[in-house]
Amino acid sequence: MFNDPDRFLRQLFDRAVEVADPMRSLKAFLPPKPEGRVIVVGAGKASARMAEAVEAEWGPCEGLVITRYGYSRPCRGIEIVEAAHPVPDEAGLVATRRMLDLLATAKEGDFVLALISGGASALLVQPAEGVSLADKQEVNAALLASGAPIDRMNTVRKHLSRVKGGQLAAAAYPARMLALMISDVPGDDPAFIGSGPTVGERSTREDALEVLRRWKIEVPASVREALDRPSGVVPPGDQRLSRVENIIYAAPRQSLNAAAAFAEQAGCVVHMLGDSLEGEAREVAAAQAEQALAIKAGMKPGDPSVLLLSGGELTVTRRGKGVGGPNAEFCLALALALQGAEGIHAIACDTDGVDGAAEVAGAVVCPDTLQRATKLGVDASGALAENDAHGFFGAIGHQVVTGPTLTNVNDFRAILIRG
Image (tube, rainbow, N blue to C red; front, side, top):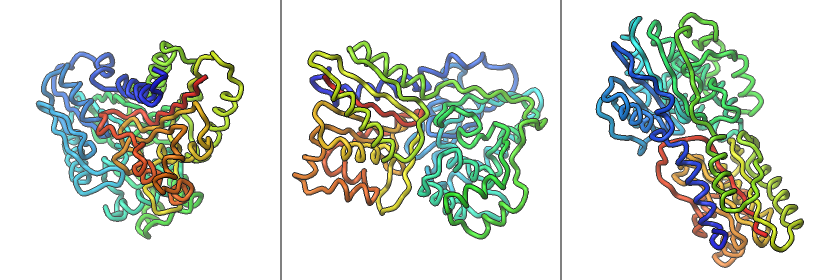
């Protein structure tokens, strides 16, 4: 396998995605179908695949699920609606309103199954009073460009919504609800998966305002006015959440462990750097490059290859005019830090197949990455300054393009150091 390290790294990534596929992972957490009326709702990049997995066990169900454009799956009863991500659109707005109307018909004795995965923050769209869809789109775009961690972005989103921060679950009360979740957030806090539509919220509107101040995020006047009023988020002890059970059934750790087992079987020594790393992509890349170079310098002939594995969600503070995907930016910064070091290869991809706003999962780094770029007249340092890592790797042919993976357990990073 190590004769083709790039292929090996891609196999590791594919293994991580495979383990998180709802068709493989959801069944064990799905109870027998309850008697009486069952309603299935959901949102996220994996939600249509989750719905497909539910109907494979339960048969056709009543319900509505919202997923990203291109991520739909065939279901026999559950309606699948596609909408925009990461910036919401009218399709998401209309579908969310219909979902709330459906939940309003739920009564005591009914059962609601909620399927939540990363991406639900943008796909569930029902702005707070006085905030238009255009205002919400502007806020989302500003948050994505700010470099703020995902949990801080979601704090703002919750207090500008009528469906996030426990409000989806409250809409289904007094029906019983089971929420099955795929985690794409560092730390696997259910309150931040898809902005916690089925989870009680402890933050305040003052917390949301602090995020705007700290990351210098400019927002429309209507948003400021909305945050000056009490929001609709539901506190954890609210009676309307008393019949809700939230279960995270798939998370980054499981996928990283599966990749680690695959690598160990191939003879690698695996160093797990954590499944919840956060921070600026270029800064984390510099630190991991330093670690990789130190390991390489200490290797003797015949030593086994070493693999550095990590997950989490890195951020990009957008300074230039590029797309700014964190996985591609990590790879570009890593290549610049490694400076063509022999025997070190890497991959960084988002497990949902979309890095930032690009229809690209990520990129690979080889010892000849910078040399290849120079021959093609592509400026690596200039691309990093412009946050144009996707343009850089596209130009040299080192992008990883998967199409919709139908799951989402956050970023996957692997650095292979060959002896």
